[in-house]
Every structure is written in C-alpha cells, then in structure tokens.
Image (cartoon, rainbow, N blue to C red; front, side):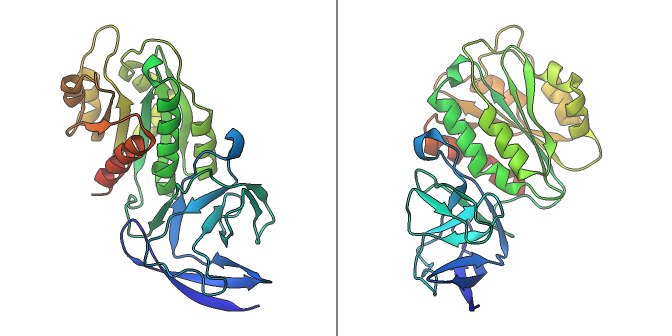
Length: 291
C-alpha cells in the first residue's frame, strides 16, 4: 500500500504540518497527523455529523494522491479522510458512515497553536436563561465544540455547567472529548430568570474536584450579567483569591459590563449572538488561556 508524506499548513498558527497519506484504491486517507484537532457543526437535517470538516489554509496544495483539499475527521477513530463533499461518507479506516457538517466549519490545532499547555483545568459556565433561548444557545454550543473541546487532552481537563434558577453540571471534569461533546449537545436554554451561580457552584461536589490540586484553573462565564436577586462579586473574588482566573463573555447589547468587570480577572469579552460572534468570543478566551 502506497504511503506519501504530505506537507500542510495549520490555518490557526501558520506552522508546518507533516501528514502521512495512504492510498486506498482510487481514494486516499490521511493519517499519522502531528497535531490534534476538534470541532463540528450542525449536520444535515439537524442530525449530529459523524465527520468534522478540517479547515486548511490557502497554502495547502491538496492531497498528492487525489488532489482534493476537502479533508474530514472521523469522530469514531479520529482518522483524517479525503472526500468529494457529498452529504454522507464512510471512513476508509473504520467504516463508520454518517453525515458531514452542513458548512465548512472546523478547527485545526497543531501542537503549538492556540491550545493550553498540559495540566490545566477549564470550566465553561453558561447562562441558559430566556435571553439564550433558540439560536444564541445553538451558536454558543457550536462555538464551544469548535474551540474548547479541541483543547482536551490526557492532562487538560474540561468541565461544563449551566445556570439559570439553579446550577447544573452538564459535563463533569473530563479528559474525554466525546463525553464533552455529548454533554454540550444536550444542553438547552429555558424561559426562566437567572441568579448568581457562585454559591451553588462552590457547594457542588463536582466543583470540588475542579478545585483540587494546584493546576492552573480557569472559569469562563457566558452571561449578560442581568441576574435576579442580590448581585455580589464576593464569591467570585473568593475564587480569584484561590488562584482561579475568572473570564466573562458579555452576551447581548444590554449586558451589565460594569458588574461583569467586577467578577472578572480581566476585561469582559464581548459575545455577539451570531455564529461567528460566539465562535470569536470563545476563541478569544481560549487564546487568553494559552498566554
């Protein structure tokens, strides 16, 4: 079976990537990648895609075996596969068949791109009150899948929680990308008010696991800050005093940025409800975490 060394470019950082292309009949699969990758977007007919489109730069000349620049990641075995862009495809490595993303969304991370170094804990905390119902929630979920899920590794752990009237842990602290993706996809916003999440969060046993050891910890909060009841930065300040870096993504034109600044370790990041706006906000937060 013919093997070809394929040079590509990481679209996020411009670093050279070395891929190994293996010809299979008239098609080819690309394996042996020197980078991690993640992210997916809505599938055909609302069904979850089995494959993620990989975004490559203009410098990528295409597969030397078949010439295509359409490269997809199989969610079952993580193989990179060349494809002609049809609605469905089958993985040449494991045989998994499923839907491709509805658009060209996808993120490539090389080992030195915008992903945390080993040994960090990240908590994504989402306000799921009525302002997030519908498209904003779907855009936020896709943005998380296209950014933070890709940073998970054996030592980089991700936790996801939501809050409205109460705090709900959607994804316990994990190094499993598939579990994180499944938990994020299940999340839904509700027509209800939101209250400060900090007290309930700090009393949650799963959060106690997040606070163990001395690894760098980050809490990223997507909210408008328009919470019911007493709003106080005291508990957020307690977290910061314990070494946790709190970051806020200010959602909506009415976001209380003054309050969000009070609970943040840095200037709030503006999060627009559009797909690109949400993705940009989460990508900015991820970049800040890597610095």
